[in-house]
Amino acid sequence: MQASSQLLIVMAAYMLVIVAIGLYFARRANASSGNYFLGGRSLGPWMTAMSAEASDMSGWLLMGLPGVAYWSGAAEAFWTALGLGLGTYVNWRIVSTRLRAYSEISGDAITIPDFLSNRFRERKKTLMAVSALFILVFFTVYASSCFVVVGKLFSSIFAVDYRLCMFAGAFFVVLYTLVGGFLAESASDFMQALVMITALTTVLGIGTFAAGGPAQLIANLGNIPGFLELFATATPRMTDGIQAVAAGRPLFAAASGYSFLAILSILSWGLGYFGMPQVLLRFMAIRDPRRLAASRRIAVSWCFVSLAAAVAIGLIGRALYPAALLTPGAAESVFILIATRLLPPLLAGIAMAGILAATISSSDSYLLIASSAVAKNIYQRLFHKEASDRRVMRVSRLTLVAIAAIGAAIALDNDSVVFQVVSFAWAGFGATFGPVMLFSLFWKRTSHAGAVAGMVAGGAMVFAWKLLIRPLGGGFTVYELLPAFVFSCLVIVVVSKLTPSPAGEIQEEFDLARRSSPVQP
Image (cartoon, rainbow, N blue to C red; front, side, top):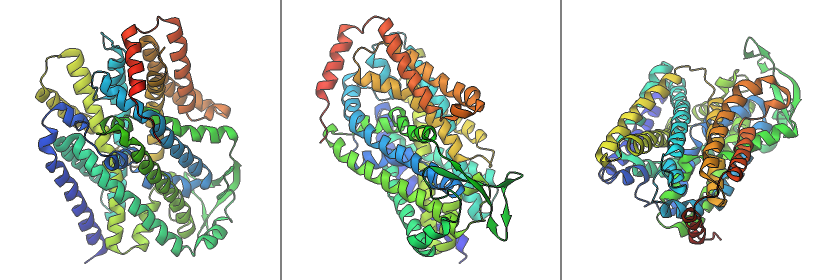
Protein backbone atom coordinates (compact mmCIF):
# COMPACT_ATOMS: atom_id res chain seq x y z
CA MET A 1 0.00 0.00 0.00
CA GLN A 2 1.34 3.43 -0.94
CA ALA A 3 2.40 5.78 1.82
CA SER A 4 -0.15 8.40 0.78
CA SER A 5 -2.93 5.80 0.98
CA GLN A 6 -1.91 4.84 4.51
CA LEU A 7 -1.86 8.51 5.53
CA LEU A 8 -5.33 8.97 4.08
CA ILE A 9 -6.71 5.91 5.89
CA VAL A 10 -5.40 7.07 9.28
CA MET A 11 -6.73 10.59 8.85
CA ALA A 12 -10.09 9.38 7.54
CA ALA A 13 -10.43 7.06 10.53
CA TYR A 14 -9.69 9.97 12.83
CA MET A 15 -12.35 12.12 11.19
CA LEU A 16 -14.91 9.32 11.55
CA VAL A 17 -14.20 9.21 15.29
CA ILE A 18 -14.87 12.95 15.50
CA VAL A 19 -18.20 12.52 13.70
CA ALA A 20 -19.12 9.69 16.06
CA ILE A 21 -18.51 11.97 19.05
CA GLY A 22 -20.82 14.59 17.54
CA LEU A 23 -23.57 12.03 16.99
CA TYR A 24 -23.16 10.67 20.52
CA PHE A 25 -23.78 14.07 22.08
CA ALA A 26 -26.46 15.18 19.62
CA ARG A 27 -29.47 14.36 21.83
CA ARG A 28 -28.09 16.11 24.92
CA ALA A 29 -26.96 19.09 22.86
CA ASN A 30 -30.40 19.58 21.32
CA ALA A 31 -32.23 19.42 24.66
CA SER A 32 -31.83 23.18 25.20
CA SER A 33 -29.81 26.17 24.09
CA GLY A 34 -27.99 26.03 27.45
CA ASN A 35 -26.76 22.54 26.61
CA TYR A 36 -25.97 23.42 23.01
CA PHE A 37 -23.95 26.56 23.82
CA LEU A 38 -22.41 25.72 27.24
CA GLY A 39 -22.97 22.02 27.85
CA GLY A 40 -25.16 22.64 30.90
CA ARG A 41 -22.07 23.50 33.00
CA SER A 42 -21.20 19.81 33.16
CA LEU A 43 -17.49 19.60 32.29
CA GLY A 44 -14.99 17.87 34.54
CA PRO A 45 -11.51 19.25 35.29
CA TRP A 46 -9.66 17.24 32.61
CA MET A 47 -12.11 18.05 29.84
CA THR A 48 -12.20 21.69 30.91
CA ALA A 49 -8.42 22.01 30.77
CA MET A 50 -7.69 20.01 27.65
CA SER A 51 -10.56 21.36 25.58
CA ALA A 52 -9.64 24.94 26.54
CA GLU A 53 -6.05 24.49 25.38
CA ALA A 54 -6.93 22.59 22.21
CA SER A 55 -9.52 25.17 21.17
CA ASP A 56 -7.08 27.95 21.97
CA MET A 57 -3.98 26.81 20.11
CA SER A 58 -5.43 25.70 16.73
CA GLY A 59 -3.34 24.64 13.74
CA TRP A 60 -1.18 27.68 14.46
CA LEU A 61 0.60 25.60 17.13
CA LEU A 62 1.76 22.92 14.69
CA MET A 63 2.23 25.12 11.63
CA GLY A 64 2.42 28.84 12.43
CA LEU A 65 4.80 28.75 15.41
CA PRO A 66 7.22 26.15 13.98
CA GLY A 67 7.16 28.15 10.75
CA VAL A 68 8.33 31.29 12.55
CA ALA A 69 11.17 29.36 14.21
CA TYR A 70 12.22 27.78 10.90
CA TRP A 71 12.19 31.09 9.05
CA SER A 72 13.91 33.52 11.42
CA GLY A 73 15.26 31.48 14.32
CA ALA A 74 14.62 31.22 18.02
CA ALA A 75 13.97 34.80 19.14
CA GLU A 76 10.47 35.62 17.93
CA ALA A 77 9.18 32.07 18.43
CA PHE A 78 10.65 31.81 21.95
CA TRP A 79 9.32 35.12 23.23
CA THR A 80 5.91 34.43 21.67
CA ALA A 81 5.75 31.03 23.37
CA LEU A 82 6.87 32.51 26.71
CA GLY A 83 4.22 35.23 26.54
CA LEU A 84 1.52 32.68 25.74
CA GLY A 85 2.64 30.37 28.53
CA LEU A 86 2.63 33.14 31.13
CA GLY A 87 -0.72 34.43 29.87
CA THR A 88 -2.20 30.95 30.16
CA TYR A 89 -1.07 30.62 33.77
CA VAL A 90 -2.28 34.04 34.90
CA ASN A 91 -5.64 33.65 33.17
CA TRP A 92 -6.32 30.31 34.85
CA ARG A 93 -5.01 31.61 38.16
CA ILE A 94 -6.98 34.84 38.58
CA VAL A 95 -9.83 34.86 36.04
CA SER A 96 -11.22 31.32 36.01
CA THR A 97 -12.76 31.07 39.47
CA ARG A 98 -14.15 34.61 39.53
CA LEU A 99 -15.76 34.24 36.10
CA ARG A 100 -17.24 30.82 36.95
CA ALA A 101 -18.91 32.21 40.05
CA TYR A 102 -19.92 35.58 38.60
CA SER A 103 -21.42 34.16 35.37
CA GLU A 104 -23.75 31.89 37.37
CA ILE A 105 -24.71 34.55 39.91
CA SER A 106 -25.29 37.14 37.18
CA GLY A 107 -28.35 35.65 35.50
CA ASP A 108 -26.75 32.25 34.78
CA ALA A 109 -25.07 33.61 31.64
CA ILE A 110 -24.16 31.06 28.96
CA THR A 111 -22.24 33.32 26.55
CA ILE A 112 -19.68 36.09 27.04
CA PRO A 113 -22.04 38.82 25.72
CA ASP A 114 -24.71 37.46 28.09
CA PHE A 115 -22.36 37.78 31.04
CA LEU A 116 -21.28 41.33 30.23
CA SER A 117 -24.86 42.44 29.69
CA ASN A 118 -26.09 40.80 32.90
CA ARG A 119 -23.09 42.09 34.88
CA PHE A 120 -24.13 45.71 34.24
CA ARG A 121 -27.91 45.07 34.27
CA GLU A 122 -28.22 46.88 30.97
CA ARG A 123 -31.66 47.55 29.51
CA LYS A 124 -30.86 48.60 25.95
CA LYS A 125 -28.38 45.74 25.46
CA THR A 126 -25.72 48.01 23.97
CA LEU A 127 -22.82 46.10 25.48
CA MET A 128 -24.32 42.79 24.38
CA ALA A 129 -24.74 43.96 20.78
CA VAL A 130 -21.24 45.47 20.55
CA SER A 131 -19.57 42.38 22.03
CA ALA A 132 -21.57 40.04 19.77
CA LEU A 133 -20.57 42.02 16.68
CA PHE A 134 -16.87 41.97 17.61
CA ILE A 135 -17.08 38.21 18.22
CA LEU A 136 -18.65 37.76 14.80
CA VAL A 137 -15.96 39.79 13.02
CA PHE A 138 -12.87 38.35 14.70
CA PHE A 139 -14.03 34.74 14.82
CA THR A 140 -14.79 34.83 11.11
CA VAL A 141 -11.14 35.81 10.57
CA TYR A 142 -10.04 33.11 13.00
CA ALA A 143 -12.11 30.45 11.24
CA SER A 144 -10.52 31.42 7.93
CA SER A 145 -7.04 30.78 9.40
CA CYS A 146 -8.14 27.26 10.37
CA PHE A 147 -9.42 26.57 6.88
CA VAL A 148 -6.06 27.75 5.47
CA VAL A 149 -4.32 25.16 7.68
CA VAL A 150 -6.59 22.35 6.46
CA GLY A 151 -6.05 23.35 2.84
CA LYS A 152 -2.28 23.50 3.21
CA LEU A 153 -2.19 20.19 5.08
CA PHE A 154 -4.06 18.08 2.55
CA SER A 155 -2.71 19.80 -0.56
CA SER A 156 0.91 19.37 0.57
CA ILE A 157 0.44 15.70 1.49
CA PHE A 158 -1.69 14.49 -1.38
CA ALA A 159 -0.76 17.03 -4.10
CA VAL A 160 -4.43 17.98 -4.48
CA ASP A 161 -5.72 21.46 -5.30
CA TYR A 162 -5.52 23.71 -2.21
CA ARG A 163 -9.00 25.16 -2.62
CA LEU A 164 -10.67 21.77 -2.92
CA CYS A 165 -8.95 20.61 0.27
CA MET A 166 -9.85 23.81 2.10
CA PHE A 167 -13.54 23.59 1.19
CA ALA A 168 -13.68 19.89 2.13
CA GLY A 169 -12.20 20.64 5.55
CA ALA A 170 -14.60 23.51 6.15
CA PHE A 171 -17.56 21.30 5.22
CA PHE A 172 -16.47 18.60 7.65
CA VAL A 173 -16.07 21.02 10.57
CA VAL A 174 -19.47 22.60 9.90
CA LEU A 175 -21.15 19.21 9.69
CA TYR A 176 -20.11 17.84 13.06
CA THR A 177 -20.39 21.17 14.92
CA LEU A 178 -23.98 21.52 13.68
CA VAL A 179 -24.84 18.12 15.11
CA GLY A 180 -23.23 18.07 18.54
CA GLY A 181 -22.77 21.62 19.84
CA PHE A 182 -20.60 22.50 22.84
CA LEU A 183 -20.52 19.04 24.44
CA ALA A 184 -19.37 17.37 21.23
CA GLU A 185 -16.87 20.16 20.72
CA SER A 186 -15.45 19.83 24.25
CA ALA A 187 -15.28 16.03 24.20
CA SER A 188 -13.59 15.94 20.81
CA ASP A 189 -11.26 18.76 21.87
CA PHE A 190 -10.17 16.68 24.86
CA MET A 191 -9.19 13.83 22.55
CA GLN A 192 -7.62 16.25 20.08
CA ALA A 193 -5.44 17.78 22.79
CA LEU A 194 -4.02 14.31 23.44
CA VAL A 195 -3.42 13.77 19.73
CA MET A 196 -1.74 17.18 19.39
CA ILE A 197 0.74 16.71 22.23
CA THR A 198 1.50 13.15 21.11
CA ALA A 199 2.20 14.35 17.57
CA LEU A 200 4.40 17.21 18.78
CA THR A 201 6.52 15.13 21.13
CA THR A 202 6.87 12.27 18.60
CA VAL A 203 8.04 14.56 15.80
CA LEU A 204 10.33 16.38 18.24
CA GLY A 205 11.95 13.13 19.32
CA ILE A 206 12.47 11.68 15.86
CA GLY A 207 13.65 15.04 14.50
CA THR A 208 16.22 15.48 17.27
CA PHE A 209 17.56 11.98 16.63
CA ALA A 210 17.79 12.57 12.87
CA ALA A 211 19.63 15.86 13.45
CA GLY A 212 22.34 14.04 15.44
CA GLY A 213 21.22 15.03 18.92
CA PRO A 214 21.08 18.41 20.71
CA ALA A 215 24.83 19.12 20.54
CA GLN A 216 25.08 18.50 16.81
CA LEU A 217 21.88 20.46 16.21
CA ILE A 218 23.22 23.51 18.06
CA ALA A 219 26.53 23.29 16.19
CA ASN A 220 24.79 23.22 12.80
CA LEU A 221 22.36 26.03 13.52
CA GLY A 222 25.05 28.16 15.14
CA ASN A 223 26.46 28.83 11.68
CA ILE A 224 23.38 30.88 10.77
CA PRO A 225 23.82 34.49 11.98
CA GLY A 226 21.43 35.19 14.87
CA PHE A 227 19.46 31.96 14.46
CA LEU A 228 19.85 30.67 18.03
CA GLU A 229 20.04 34.04 19.77
CA LEU A 230 17.21 35.46 21.89
CA PHE A 231 18.18 39.12 21.38
CA ALA A 232 18.81 38.93 17.64
CA THR A 233 17.00 37.33 14.73
CA ALA A 234 18.13 35.63 11.53
CA THR A 235 17.44 37.49 8.28
CA PRO A 236 16.91 35.33 5.17
CA ARG A 237 18.36 36.96 2.03
CA MET A 238 15.47 37.33 -0.41
CA THR A 239 15.30 37.44 -4.21
CA ASP A 240 11.88 38.09 -5.77
CA GLY A 241 10.15 37.04 -2.53
CA ILE A 242 12.06 33.75 -2.23
CA GLN A 243 15.07 33.01 -0.04
CA ALA A 244 18.24 32.85 -2.12
CA VAL A 245 20.14 29.55 -2.26
CA ALA A 246 23.77 28.88 -3.22
CA ALA A 247 25.34 25.41 -3.47
CA GLY A 248 22.26 23.93 -1.87
CA ARG A 249 22.48 26.18 1.19
CA PRO A 250 20.07 29.00 2.02
CA LEU A 251 21.61 32.45 2.25
CA PHE A 252 21.23 34.79 5.23
CA ALA A 253 22.11 38.44 5.68
CA ALA A 254 23.66 39.74 8.91
CA ALA A 255 21.53 39.14 12.01
CA SER A 256 19.05 41.84 12.97
CA GLY A 257 18.90 43.12 16.53
CA TYR A 258 15.90 42.17 18.65
CA SER A 259 15.17 45.17 20.86
CA PHE A 260 13.53 45.36 24.27
CA LEU A 261 10.50 46.96 22.62
CA ALA A 262 10.25 44.03 20.21
CA ILE A 263 10.43 41.55 23.08
CA LEU A 264 7.80 43.47 25.06
CA SER A 265 5.63 43.52 21.96
CA ILE A 266 5.88 39.75 21.49
CA LEU A 267 5.37 39.01 25.19
CA SER A 268 2.11 40.95 24.96
CA TRP A 269 0.61 37.93 23.18
CA GLY A 270 -0.10 36.72 26.72
CA LEU A 271 -2.54 39.60 27.28
CA GLY A 272 -4.81 38.08 24.67
CA TYR A 273 -5.90 35.28 26.97
CA PHE A 274 -8.02 37.57 29.11
CA GLY A 275 -10.29 38.16 26.12
CA MET A 276 -10.45 34.75 24.43
CA PRO A 277 -14.11 33.61 24.44
CA GLN A 278 -13.24 29.99 23.61
CA VAL A 279 -11.14 29.78 26.79
CA LEU A 280 -13.39 31.89 29.02
CA LEU A 281 -16.37 29.70 28.16
CA ARG A 282 -14.53 26.66 29.55
CA PHE A 283 -14.17 28.47 32.87
CA MET A 284 -17.92 29.03 32.87
CA ALA A 285 -18.73 25.43 31.87
CA ILE A 286 -16.91 23.44 34.56
CA ARG A 287 -19.24 21.50 36.82
CA ASP A 288 -17.43 22.14 40.13
CA PRO A 289 -15.53 25.45 40.40
CA ARG A 290 -13.39 23.98 43.17
CA ARG A 291 -11.75 21.76 40.52
CA LEU A 292 -10.43 24.72 38.55
CA ALA A 293 -7.10 24.49 40.38
CA ALA A 294 -6.64 20.95 39.04
CA SER A 295 -7.65 22.14 35.58
CA ARG A 296 -5.10 24.94 35.80
CA ARG A 297 -2.24 22.55 36.49
CA ILE A 298 -3.25 20.29 33.61
CA ALA A 299 -3.72 23.17 31.18
CA VAL A 300 -0.49 24.99 32.03
CA SER A 301 1.58 21.79 31.83
CA TRP A 302 0.09 20.92 28.43
CA CYS A 303 0.66 24.45 27.20
CA PHE A 304 4.34 24.75 28.13
CA VAL A 305 5.25 21.30 26.79
CA SER A 306 3.42 21.87 23.51
CA LEU A 307 4.82 25.35 22.93
CA ALA A 308 8.39 24.26 23.66
CA ALA A 309 8.04 21.29 21.29
CA ALA A 310 6.59 23.47 18.51
CA VAL A 311 9.47 25.97 18.70
CA ALA A 312 12.07 23.21 18.77
CA ILE A 313 10.53 21.47 15.73
CA GLY A 314 10.91 24.64 13.68
CA LEU A 315 14.60 24.91 14.60
CA ILE A 316 15.22 21.22 13.91
CA GLY A 317 13.53 21.54 10.53
CA ARG A 318 16.00 24.23 9.44
CA ALA A 319 18.90 21.95 10.38
CA LEU A 320 17.49 18.92 8.58
CA TYR A 321 16.04 20.59 5.48
CA PRO A 322 17.73 24.00 5.25
CA ALA A 323 16.69 24.84 1.68
CA ALA A 324 13.36 23.02 1.41
CA LEU A 325 11.05 25.86 2.45
CA LEU A 326 12.00 29.21 0.97
CA THR A 327 9.11 31.55 1.81
CA PRO A 328 7.43 32.43 5.13
CA GLY A 329 4.25 30.71 3.98
CA ALA A 330 6.07 27.56 2.91
CA ALA A 331 7.98 27.49 6.21
CA GLU A 332 4.71 26.74 8.00
CA SER A 333 4.82 23.24 6.48
CA VAL A 334 7.98 22.27 8.40
CA PHE A 335 6.07 19.99 10.80
CA ILE A 336 4.50 18.17 7.84
CA LEU A 337 7.88 17.88 6.11
CA ILE A 338 9.62 16.29 9.12
CA ALA A 339 6.75 13.91 9.88
CA THR A 340 6.30 12.63 6.34
CA ARG A 341 10.04 12.29 5.67
CA LEU A 342 11.06 10.58 8.92
CA LEU A 343 8.07 8.64 10.25
CA PRO A 344 6.53 5.44 8.85
CA PRO A 345 3.30 6.22 6.97
CA LEU A 346 0.96 5.08 9.75
CA LEU A 347 2.77 7.13 12.39
CA ALA A 348 3.00 10.06 9.99
CA GLY A 349 -0.76 9.77 9.57
CA ILE A 350 -1.18 10.11 13.32
CA ALA A 351 1.10 13.16 13.29
CA MET A 352 -0.94 14.69 10.46
CA ALA A 353 -4.05 13.95 12.48
CA GLY A 354 -2.45 16.16 15.13
CA ILE A 355 -2.60 19.12 12.76
CA LEU A 356 -6.13 18.20 11.80
CA ALA A 357 -6.99 17.92 15.50
CA ALA A 358 -5.57 21.34 16.25
CA THR A 359 -7.48 22.90 13.39
CA ILE A 360 -10.81 21.22 14.09
CA SER A 361 -10.64 21.84 17.83
CA SER A 362 -10.33 25.57 17.22
CA SER A 363 -12.56 26.10 14.20
CA ASP A 364 -15.51 24.35 15.83
CA SER A 365 -15.18 26.64 18.87
CA TYR A 366 -14.94 29.75 16.71
CA LEU A 367 -17.96 28.84 14.62
CA LEU A 368 -20.10 27.85 17.60
CA ILE A 369 -19.29 30.95 19.65
CA ALA A 370 -19.79 33.31 16.72
CA SER A 371 -23.10 31.72 15.77
CA SER A 372 -24.29 31.80 19.39
CA ALA A 373 -23.45 35.51 19.53
CA VAL A 374 -25.75 36.15 16.58
CA ALA A 375 -28.56 33.76 17.53
CA LYS A 376 -28.65 34.17 21.30
CA ASN A 377 -27.40 37.70 21.80
CA ILE A 378 -28.61 39.54 18.72
CA TYR A 379 -31.56 37.59 17.31
CA GLN A 380 -33.18 36.60 20.61
CA ARG A 381 -32.09 39.27 23.07
CA LEU A 382 -32.54 42.25 20.76
CA PHE A 383 -35.23 41.37 18.23
CA HIS A 384 -37.23 38.27 19.21
CA LYS A 385 -37.26 37.99 22.99
CA GLU A 386 -39.96 35.30 22.93
CA ALA A 387 -38.14 33.06 20.46
CA SER A 388 -38.10 29.41 21.52
CA ASP A 389 -34.93 27.42 22.15
CA ARG A 390 -35.59 25.44 18.99
CA ARG A 391 -35.79 28.60 16.89
CA VAL A 392 -32.66 30.05 18.50
CA MET A 393 -30.70 26.89 17.70
CA ARG A 394 -32.03 26.90 14.13
CA VAL A 395 -30.86 30.49 13.66
CA SER A 396 -27.51 29.56 15.23
CA ARG A 397 -27.00 26.73 12.75
CA LEU A 398 -27.88 28.90 9.77
CA THR A 399 -25.50 31.57 11.04
CA LEU A 400 -22.76 28.98 11.55
CA VAL A 401 -23.01 27.93 7.91
CA ALA A 402 -22.91 31.57 6.76
CA ILE A 403 -19.84 32.36 8.89
CA ALA A 404 -18.07 29.26 7.59
CA ALA A 405 -18.81 30.32 4.01
CA ILE A 406 -17.34 33.79 4.61
CA GLY A 407 -14.31 32.30 6.37
CA ALA A 408 -13.75 29.93 3.44
CA ALA A 409 -13.94 32.85 1.01
CA ILE A 410 -11.25 34.69 3.02
CA ALA A 411 -9.13 31.52 3.01
CA LEU A 412 -9.12 31.17 -0.79
CA ASP A 413 -5.60 32.65 -0.94
CA ASN A 414 -3.25 29.73 -0.37
CA ASP A 415 -0.36 32.16 0.21
CA SER A 416 -1.95 33.33 3.46
CA VAL A 417 0.49 33.13 6.37
CA VAL A 418 -1.36 31.54 9.28
CA PHE A 419 0.77 33.26 11.92
CA GLN A 420 -0.14 36.71 10.59
CA VAL A 421 -3.86 35.98 10.26
CA VAL A 422 -4.04 34.56 13.78
CA SER A 423 -2.01 37.42 15.28
CA PHE A 424 -4.52 40.00 14.04
CA ALA A 425 -7.58 38.10 15.32
CA TRP A 426 -5.79 37.40 18.62
CA ALA A 427 -5.09 41.11 19.05
CA GLY A 428 -8.72 41.88 18.26
CA PHE A 429 -10.08 39.63 20.97
CA GLY A 430 -7.40 40.52 23.48
CA ALA A 431 -7.96 44.28 23.22
CA THR A 432 -11.73 44.15 22.79
CA PHE A 433 -12.63 41.72 25.56
CA GLY A 434 -9.54 41.42 27.77
CA PRO A 435 -9.67 44.79 29.56
CA VAL A 436 -13.45 44.83 29.96
CA MET A 437 -13.42 41.30 31.38
CA LEU A 438 -10.68 42.12 33.90
CA PHE A 439 -12.31 45.36 35.03
CA SER A 440 -15.76 43.75 35.18
CA LEU A 441 -14.45 40.96 37.37
CA PHE A 442 -12.11 42.91 39.65
CA TRP A 443 -13.08 46.61 39.79
CA LYS A 444 -16.43 47.33 41.36
CA ARG A 445 -16.40 50.94 40.17
CA THR A 446 -16.49 49.96 36.49
CA SER A 447 -19.52 51.60 34.91
CA HIS A 448 -21.63 50.45 32.00
CA ALA A 449 -20.50 53.44 29.95
CA GLY A 450 -16.87 52.68 30.78
CA ALA A 451 -17.27 49.06 29.66
CA VAL A 452 -18.86 50.02 26.33
CA ALA A 453 -16.33 52.77 25.65
CA GLY A 454 -13.39 50.53 26.56
CA MET A 455 -14.57 47.71 24.32
CA VAL A 456 -15.11 49.98 21.31
CA ALA A 457 -11.81 51.79 21.93
CA GLY A 458 -9.85 48.55 22.13
CA GLY A 459 -11.37 47.07 18.98
CA ALA A 460 -11.00 50.29 17.00
CA MET A 461 -7.38 50.75 18.10
CA VAL A 462 -6.46 47.28 16.81
CA PHE A 463 -7.58 48.27 13.32
CA ALA A 464 -6.10 51.78 13.55
CA TRP A 465 -2.72 50.59 14.80
CA LYS A 466 -2.48 47.71 12.34
CA LEU A 467 -3.55 49.66 9.25
CA LEU A 468 -2.52 53.26 9.93
CA ILE A 469 0.08 53.55 12.68
CA ARG A 470 2.21 50.42 12.40
CA PRO A 471 3.17 51.11 8.75
CA LEU A 472 4.94 54.29 9.98
CA GLY A 473 7.76 52.03 11.21
CA GLY A 474 10.25 52.61 14.00
CA GLY A 475 8.80 52.31 17.48
CA PHE A 476 5.32 52.05 15.99
CA THR A 477 5.98 48.50 14.75
CA VAL A 478 4.96 47.16 18.16
CA TYR A 479 2.31 44.43 18.01
CA GLU A 480 -1.12 46.11 17.92
CA LEU A 481 -2.43 44.16 20.92
CA LEU A 482 -0.19 46.03 23.39
CA PRO A 483 -1.20 49.65 22.59
CA ALA A 484 -4.82 48.68 22.01
CA PHE A 485 -5.01 46.83 25.35
CA VAL A 486 -3.47 49.75 27.26
CA PHE A 487 -5.70 52.25 25.47
CA SER A 488 -8.82 50.25 26.30
CA CYS A 489 -7.84 50.08 29.99
CA LEU A 490 -7.30 53.85 30.14
CA VAL A 491 -10.65 54.53 28.48
CA ILE A 492 -12.48 52.22 30.92
CA VAL A 493 -10.94 53.96 33.93
CA VAL A 494 -11.46 57.52 32.67
CA VAL A 495 -15.05 57.01 31.48
CA SER A 496 -16.00 55.08 34.63
CA LYS A 497 -14.63 57.89 36.80
CA LEU A 498 -16.56 60.49 34.79
CA THR A 499 -19.88 58.64 34.95
CA PRO A 500 -22.06 57.71 37.95
CA SER A 501 -21.14 54.73 40.11
CA PRO A 502 -22.94 51.45 39.37
CA ALA A 503 -26.25 50.92 41.14
CA GLY A 504 -26.26 49.41 44.61
CA GLU A 505 -27.61 46.02 43.48
CA ILE A 506 -24.81 45.73 40.90
CA GLN A 507 -22.19 46.41 43.57
CA GLU A 508 -23.83 43.91 45.93
CA GLU A 509 -23.75 41.27 43.21
CA PHE A 510 -20.07 42.05 42.62
CA ASP A 511 -19.33 41.47 46.32
CA LEU A 512 -21.30 38.22 46.27
CA ALA A 513 -19.29 36.96 43.30
CA ARG A 514 -16.06 37.86 45.07
CA ARG A 515 -17.09 35.96 48.20
CA SER A 516 -18.28 32.99 46.15
CA SER A 517 -15.04 32.55 44.22
CA PRO A 518 -13.00 29.66 45.67
CA VAL A 519 -9.36 30.44 46.38
CA GLN A 520 -7.03 28.35 44.24
CA PRO A 521 -4.19 26.55 46.04
